[in-house]
Image (cartoon, rainbow, N blue to C red; front, side, top):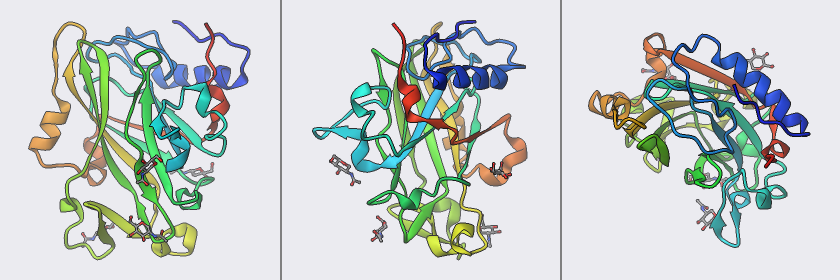
Length: 251
Ligand SMILES: *[C@@H]1O[C@H](CO)[C@@H](O)[C@H](O)[C@H]1NC(C)=O
Ligand SMILES: *[C@@H]1O[C@H](CO)[C@@H](O)[C@H](O)[C@H]1NC(C)=O
Ligand SMILES: *[C@@H]1O[C@H](CO)[C@@H](O)[C@H](O)[C@H]1NC(C)=O
Ligand SMILES: *[C@@H]1O[C@H](CO)[C@@H](O)[C@H](O)[C@H]1NC(C)=O
């Protein structure tokens, strides 16, 4: 098992947590545990991705979006938070983010999320709106798209508010189910506004096997997995314990 060696405390902590998360994964041949390194995967391998929450502005340098792994973003992402997950390739997973110490409303202009992985072939999702003082989006859907086992793109998907249609707890904001921020627990309301992300996969693995979980989920028209909690093979919870300085890498 390869663990990133570097003098940086962030990585030591990170490696420990990721190893703990991977216990019990039988067919896990992917030895890359850092979200800031390149790798090639097979179906059922573990795959590490990072998620950063920050203001939209902080993901860009001169209007060009960079990977959170890029040291040039270190300053602008100083106030952002990072969570790491290690789901299994082609397994539908629910990524839960414990917000207790982070309210995405508090970022200037609103909180945005970016998912990322890779170094030379750094792949980043577009920044996705999460919250401002009016609205909170609590459920997102993310597709990891691979080409012969190499990550090709990370895409946000939405279902045009189908999953919350007719539910008065929600409002439809830009095609997505949102909760009025005043109803969230942090604001004295009753709704748990923690973020959950449904993760699915598409494309092909290193041996050209088709990754089909995105196709399955979209066919079932079942974007909203949160209610089907018990059907999920894996639920990964992360606290925002990692800070951006852990984006340093060796070699
Ligand atoms: C985020 O920032 C970029 C770069 O400044 C800008 O082009 C883009 O329109 C912004 N997106 C939103 C939703 O504000
Ligand atoms: C979130 O974190 C807080 C503080 O660490 C903890 O008390 C709470 O139980 C956690 N919630 C979940 C759903 O894990
Ligand atoms: C929050 O975001 C929504 C959706 O983009 C927008 O309509 C609203 O004006 C924003 N509220 C604030 C206070 O910026
Ligand atoms: C509306 O959504 C909330 C939060 O997910 C849920 O607890 C509630 O049961 C839903 N209500 C209806 C009528 O579906």
